[in-house]
Image (tube, rainbow, N blue to C red; front, side, top):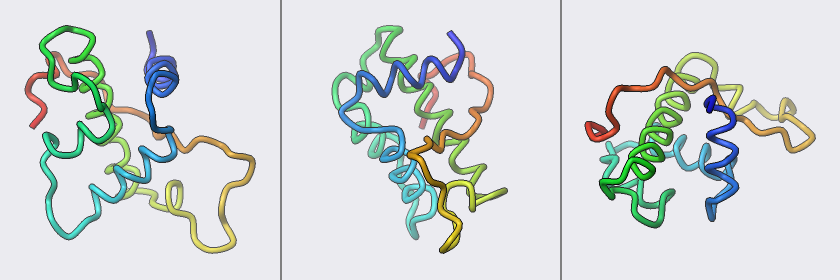
Length: 110
C-alpha cells in the first residue's frame, strides 16, 4: 500500500482528522520545548500505540514519517501548512505533505 492510501486508511479509522493531526504535529515541531514521541504519539493513536504487533508498529512508523514530513515542510515551505493571511487554501483540501521513505523498523522511534 502506498503512503497516500495508508494515510487515508489511517485517518478513516482515527478519531482525529488529517488536518487536525498536521496542525498538532506543527505545534509539536515548533513549540519552545522538545516533546518526546512517547508523549505525542498516544494523542493521535489513542489505542495500542506501543503494542508489539506489526499493525501497531506500522501505524507508529506512518505517524513518525508524517511528523518528519511536517517538520521538513515547515522548514522548507511553511506557507504550505501555515499560509500567510489572504493566501489560505480553499475547498477543504488536505495538506498532507510528502512522506519520507519508510524505515526498516518502527520500534526505534524515540
